Length: 291
Image (cartoon, rainbow, N blue to C red):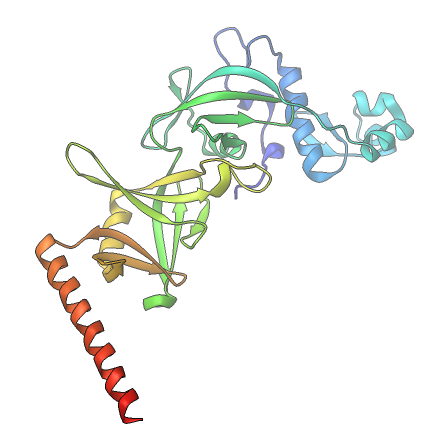
């Protein structure tokens, strides 16, 4: 999971439109900074103040010592301690549709312009959620807004594997540097185009709509890039999915099919498996009679 990187950015780092506004219409830079500061405070458990464009954890008298004349310094030691002791639970304000678009290749756009800084993309991705209806949202403790996603938000760009057979472990790195190991909670699936039957593999990155505490949802996936898919195909081996013979990969003692064998091979395999099962049953019967 991508860690919160609010301390790495200054107000000038965030995207604005031609009027200098932030994603939520009518919000000033100070309001947006207060939202981000509130998020940082919620994760660290300490009051946070703004000083020279950097976010610094302070408490009580340390705020005045840092040379900041912000809200924490004006409230004083007692007020800051009371706020830290009794954090308020906020209900995010619905901002409607935000001018964000995530392309199929994983590029994030703001008002039609690509967001070039990877750190900023990781920042937004850390607050990305998905609802049960399939819609995607950017959500902080104070605000939330719907964004558009062409396919899925992330792309798996690198594969690393250890072990072999059932003990094999497949780990994927996404375009935002999240590392995910394929297992029961993070399955690999392959979808096929209805017209061309072209396969597109996906990996579950954040089950349940976006991670711990996100509630139930459809989960957030990454599309497995073509180069990584070729690496998976090189690791594939035959396996069974019910009575279907398929090529797939093992990871954490789970078999993930990548594609079915041709019908004639699948039919022969099913018949061979059925014959082997029948022979085993007859053998067991004879063994019981001998006993």
